[in-house]
Image (cartoon, rainbow, N blue to C red; front, top):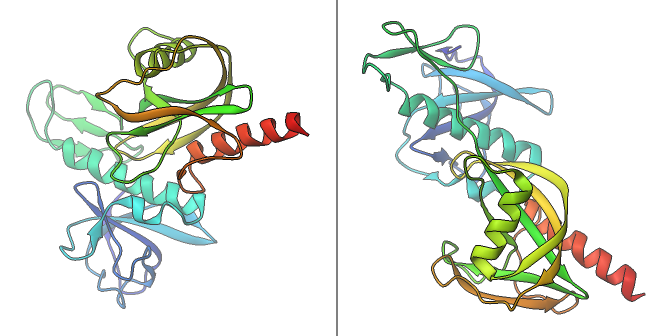
Length: 257
């Protein structure tokens, strides 16, 4: 529950507005609220990091408001807490009014939810399930350059789960749609909260079954089969995509030896 931040409050500070994060020195601010100019703001505790509170303040600091991607290469737990803060800030910003009756809503005092006092609707933060999959063909892995990426990074395939399908069905469909390839032996690996804007990435590995690679020209700029010891520019460490690639490379190396 939000309350007025005092000059004595200390910890890590997630200051967010419109899916942006305040990074005054390029890092997540840490320390005393007064020294950071945050005393008097409305905030709430959303977690703990290294024995100190992690606070969320929902306001626009104008300068130094950037994407949470700027700290993606920091500790995974800290990145996830910052991502949680950004997602919660956006949830509260986008749920000021009830989608059923249009009346103003208020925050629940007992849980993370927005409540409508008029029609009694209750809204919780929404999470969009996504699959991400590394596809192996012998000593090669399928990597693609996505149109939404503004760099030369090559990564594994991914996509949103559609209504009425299982995660395994989503893997098969997305791979076929984006690469014209069929996969087999689909197995779950891990998951990662992904605040872009509010996804949960569920990671899989799969083996190539059949089909000639032909990438989707709308979502992918390029795609190809890459030998495990001759890879293009990869996603940064700490991402589930990088883990999938490294795990696949490890399997290829072990079999090659």
